[in-house]
Length: 124
Image (cartoon, rainbow, N blue to C red; front, side, top):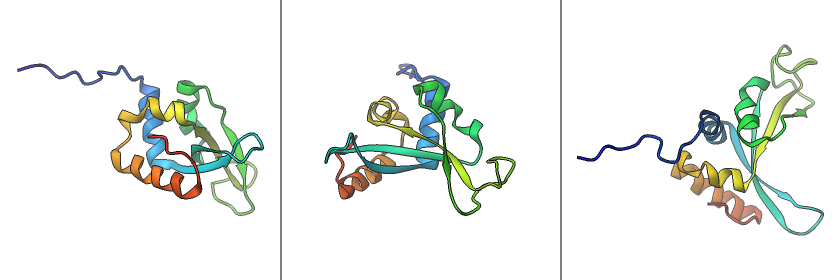
């Protein structure tokens, strides 16, 4: 009987946490790229707590930005002032392909369907 390796692709802890954040908190989006008619697929990850998005920053080097809103969506101590907004970061196709084995198949299928409907090229 052969011994199965648990981490054959050698994923880091931050990559694993990024994949989990992508399919639990992520939303597939299709955005215009460089003022052209082409569209670019991405997954936006939002959270009230900025520290929850740190694994994505450490694994892929993307910045964490503010997404302000008119209504209160987070506790004021997590998103100052007054809790009107969330913290946000994005995962792009090269990042998603790298962590694809860690994302369940049903999420990849849903995201591809969403991107097709919105006019983007599917990633997976």
